[in-house]
Image 1 (tube, rainbow, N blue to C red):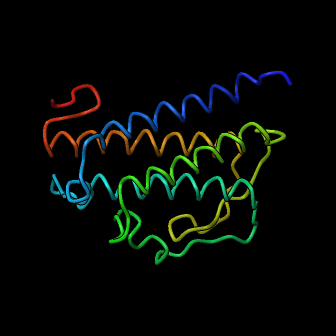
Image 2: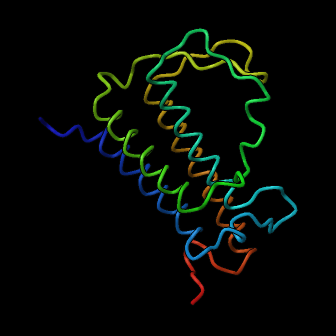
Length: 167
């Protein structure tokens, strides 16, 4: 089977952004992962929880293509919070599984240009259709966006960031 360079590039871009995010978690204990370091409510563990859920959600949207799907505001409660039984290691292991499933989806999806329905939300009450490609790029944007947040939170925690790790 010939390698589809566009698909492999997309997988590589996702992998590289996941790795940048992971760097912000190096050497943290569970307490540090839950610690607020800015005026924001965001924590490194909460952001990790979100990016794992986000990627899992959007790949499910691609697979299910549910024209009646909708998300209620209540579904987002706790989205940016590490649950009491969550661990950094556990969330990272889950993310590895999600990433593997995403790569498989990218490699096996017949046409990245296929238009799929997105769930309606309180802020997007009308159904929007995205291509599979755009949906995957949205996942990439989410990971990239929150990697930047994570970098700031980690730097505020102990001075480390994706380009400087404290000894």
